[in-house]
Image 1 (tube, one colour):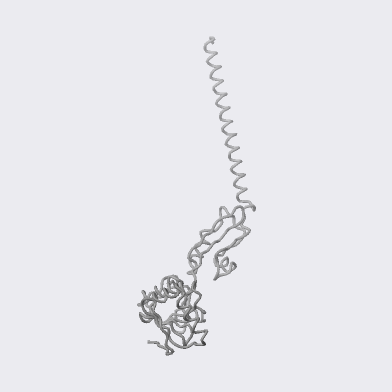
Image 2 (cartoon, one colour):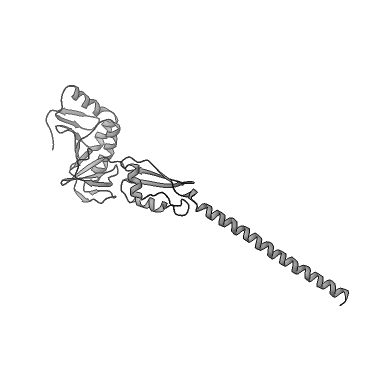
Length: 261
């Protein structure tokens, strides 16, 4: 073997050693990487990330415990991999009372539920029962117990499904009446019952004290505080029976007769 061949063999041997060394380095790096990943996986699946608490905010009609029960929210699940957040949101969104539902993680071990409820603004008399609706006319529930809300009568109902807007022949009048009820709540006045069967609605402050006019006229009068002044003056004079009639250009008159037509 000459010197040139010997040098060749030496170079090949060095190359083989380098390749073996590289393979060992790659294997070592892979093992280290795998160990790190395994450590992270075990850490993320540890009790440190087990759900220990749920918080609820924005609720009024339902209590926090009722919402957690409806959502089937249970502690113990892993907050990262098995939080159940989509299922919690889906269960709550199925209830007509919730207009918006937000469910978020608060690492390491809390889940925050935030809801926006639909307000109960009126009860629609339907046979011997009441249908509770929100400010958009969405049906929230049915009950046989007086809801202690403004009761609406005179609607010719064609559709009334939970979670959907009530459908009736007097749709425009109902829409304006619901807007008027918003003014009523802000204007510190309360109507016990409203008959919406005609263009001129009849709003009962008492069984024997009625306000008669269009929803638009009443809303304008309430927003301006004029109706409240008239009602307060009648109360001061001990009058609790009669009809307050509204007309255009802020006109109002009172008669001791009860006008239901």
